[in-house]
Image (cartoon, rainbow, N blue to C red; front, top):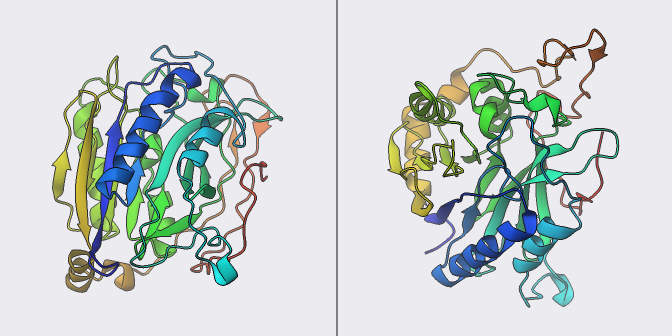
Length: 329
């Protein structure tokens, strides 16, 4: 398969526990299996590293350069040195036609020296972190108050390349806010990843499927969502095509979902439905300042969210290495 034809994506549906060390073995096994099967993009759920079904439970937080994430990043390493002069490829590089092993996206709980931890997604390839996203929209709904134990993210939206596809990440509850997916579409995203830990409840499965289909259809992009299974989570990992059709969906059990994404189908959908080119309004990328009651947490003091560094215009992504292990404000 050439880079122009498509790529193979696999969503891993897990039932994580609260201990990162206890969750690591199944993640490393899945990475090894994906490498053997020629998978290009391997997606794990939200909070793969540490999860609890009890609202308000403090999950186990670690830095991005230690513990669970460090082991996952190391597992993506290869022995290749095919950059200029035999040096390793730069972060974010993806050389067409060369098997570098899968790019792995995994959810973790990232320690925060200034307050509660972040709910963070990390993308890694070839032994390096290539992108980080800290969840912006916290799940303060349906009797849950995620903001009681998790800090909102910094609003920085990063993308990366896999097999010629531009990839962006959102996290679970973010799916209910279409602006973030549209901002990623502005940055050229072809595939939207949505790791999740979707809580079961009345109409919740319908919400899940509807939102995933809507985000793919309105942005004419693929959407691949890996969900937590077991306990009070619905599972239901799925892959949605740019025309909004669900091409593959898992049940509620622990499983994997593997699907081929077609560049030709993506291009055809965007030619037939040029909605991104035809729209008349631009999404403002500045984060809105919320007060503590707005976030669902009692208290009168305002809690300002950091401003994003992005502009409304499409961003040209730099090639230099970015240090993802230190928090950016």
